[in-house]
Length: 293
Figure 1 (cartoon, rainbow, N blue to C red):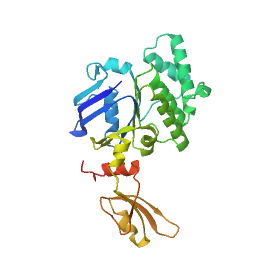
Figure 2: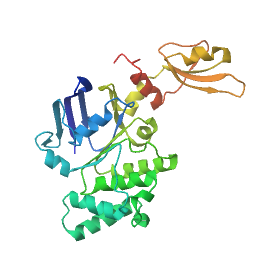
Figure 3: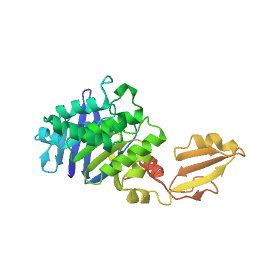
Figure 4: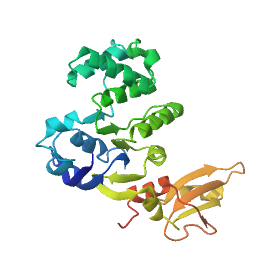
């Protein structure tokens, strides 16, 4: 199910502009929404999930219109918020049974079949009888995506799903989302560049409430072609490198020098060499305001 967002704005009380003229078209598969903390990602996800209303603008999901068809939208949508609240005294199975009932699955048999299938899909069938308070962070995220999948939604929204997970759990969760994205629309909202790079072919970058980039990863990388530089600088230039807004990263070598990576339209340091850009380079290029687009 395609999602069309047109001129979407959100202004909170006190005149705080959380979103400004957001325009996006999101099709089937995995779509990434990348941006720093406080950029407005969660606000946008909550609007799409019908939790909060926009100030103005239009959102259409298939033939359904936000603000007019909210009940129908909720029936075809699964949502995993940034902060999930669980009933710790319930087992994983009991929790999913409860959520299934809230989602309108009235038949006890249908609920049992749906819960069993989802526990298997997220690889929690062995922990189904354990209380949620015993679950690790990764297991809670997997039970969270399981509840989002109840009712077989056409659209799934996940907000910062890998934050706080260890590297192994993060990889497993990304693989689960990739598998789910083969036959539905999934929006992955995160500030973790690696999650987008590993899972999505198209994305948008949101910064201070505005879309500063929208397109494919390939197109995004082309924006910083011939603008990423690497070099080795002496320790005496450490303060110089630290205070440069174009600095992407620096690493101290065994000789006490610094290997730095910088982004600039022209050579930023004598002897610097052009490097192959990666997604983090392009992301910082746009969120630091160095792009003129």
